[in-house]
Length: 127
Image 1 (cartoon, helix red, strand yellow):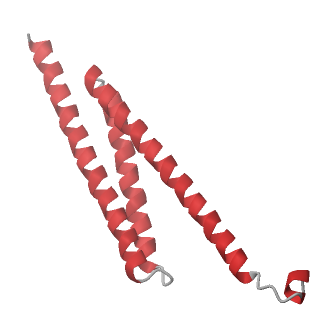
Image 2: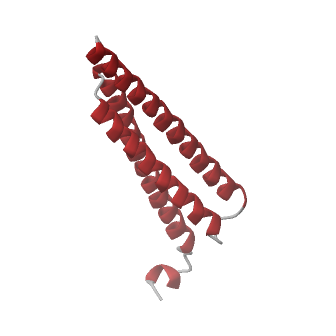
């Protein structure tokens, strides 16, 4: 028994609060990191579009497809997790599904840009 417990001080609430703060900090850092990675991807797509760099556009498309795979796997894990229930589970799944939709749209837009770029290069070579 520790000294605080001997004095009748309940430390379980203190530790629970510190744990919650730690988890919240980890989540905030993960969100910032994810946001930064997506921002870098979008800037790379924009730059590649402006330069008509088909190689970089294809690489960006592959990154988007990798994010889709990641979120699909995460969705499966969240669905199977018996500890996640109710509103928290629904919010997690809604966020995951939104990210899957976003990256699907992004990859299709990149595909369109790649096809436009290929068509443009073919036109230029025919002239």
